[in-house]
Image (cartoon, rainbow over all chains, first blue to last red):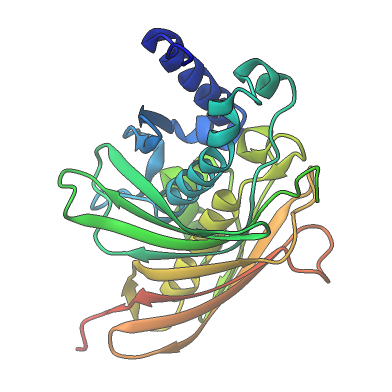
Length: 167
Length: 139
């Protein structure tokens, strides 16, 4: 039996692949979105900043920021799920990924449910790929601030998957 | 809405300012807001196409402005918004959204919107949503 990959090496490989994927999306950087990873599970984090405010009277995070955060979380989760097997099997390396960035899924439609006011503090989101076929995918995203059980927004989106070489 | 108020509307929203939005027209339940293409707003570096979220933010702001310009409106917040992405916006081109608040009830406003780049015949995206409708106190 092949010896398992040393844990630090494995973590480094996964983290650099994720950093390459997220780092390639300028708009995620503009909003300040980062991702935390536990195994294959991703949590998107949106640290609060003053420029994210939509209603200064309340104050509340702009609805467009919330929609953007959820859409970024959905696309990264879907791409991550799409690349995971290739990365784990070694067919794709983080270095090769950085040289030729993977094609990203394209949003077909995206529906956001605004459940509560976005407060001026950090926000978190987790996406779940409910269906991912060769061409189309359906993804659900949930976002919260202080309490995981008290969602402040959720969304469902449909995506067109990038065409693979063997298609 | 007088022009200085229209300008104030965008200036009062930090995120609308961060995206460089400009309110072109507003009145009687209609609004038009536009923004320039910017490398920082790109979603897919392979194509240079602006992120759907940035288009969504433009549509949401424009929808909210349309509701606020409806006679009797005092305040609003988005309840839900669905965006359909028809095609990729051409990199480098300005994006313009137009929104119409086509019906209001006592507490709810219904909005539809379209966005296009410099090719105004082919929409980049369409949206429909429900917003809260807070009315001025009846005298």
